[in-house]
Length: 147
Image (cartoon, rainbow, N blue to C red; front, side):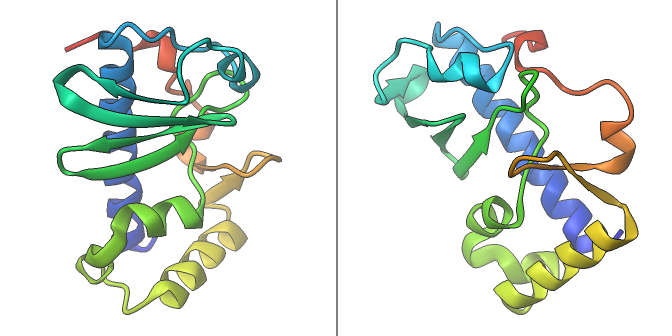
């Protein structure tokens, strides 16, 4: 896999894990599925522990961590390791060149190539997973423990 894309995915997934840990620490119940998340009865906008704003939407959430915002969707079984090129682009923001990409088109081309070679696997609905991780145990939101 392209090393810059692999690093971007890993950084994104780390931020998602941090965001989910903060949701849990703030008393927000974590789902066992993406559809369960839609029924979690919390305000669509709010503030988590430490003054961190969040925005609940559809199957996911945007959390404005101190190091930058991360937007993610829960997977069909509560997974938090899924992503797509839009989320990666949004997460990288002005730091895209630090991952070795000149522009959005370069990242999208790299992403497409990794899908074509099988390094990234499509879930069937929006999200992609790293092939080696998807074949093993998935990272589930409800398995995370507060730090």
